[in-house]
Length: 120
Length: 111
Image (cartoon, rainbow over all chains, first blue to last red; front, top):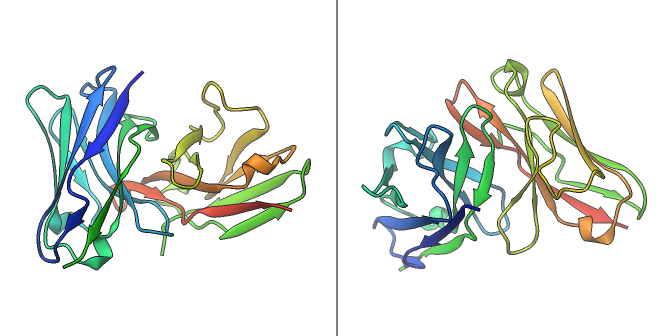
């Protein structure tokens, strides 16, 4: 069974870049069946899709975040990354990585999530 | 403002049936994209409950069912149990946004 684990700093200063890593184990999501995806959830609020990366290298970003987001994958395709630039307090959230099933468009496996706070 | 609209809260007594609605538009649910539902316990990641409008992943009780009609979808929960008192989210794809969208979430209270 695929397992996903987020890692990265829990505190980021305003105007800096948030960087997170998602490590995939127990299987591969770097194939035509899946996208790698990032989703976030501000404290006490709902879920927001941030962006997705397909195995071909194509990326898809939430229009509201597109100018600040980059999602990439390493050469081994066992880790994928999120970078969100120019962060503000509004970017404080639990960040989840997930696998997104291609063609049916649902998120089947999720990481446990990591809280990132933006504060000076 | 979420692209998919859910009631903030619903409630029901133990053993009863409740439904949670998810209203979209012609660019998402109404365009034929599937609706998927997630259950989120406090402090944990969402868990897939229903995919492709009506399908239950292995291990999900048949008390949970999904339906879709036009630009809306619903999640029905029968035989309400105390453990069902958590948050539920719908999700689909939006062709105008060219991305995946969620409802704002619904908190279920078991009276």
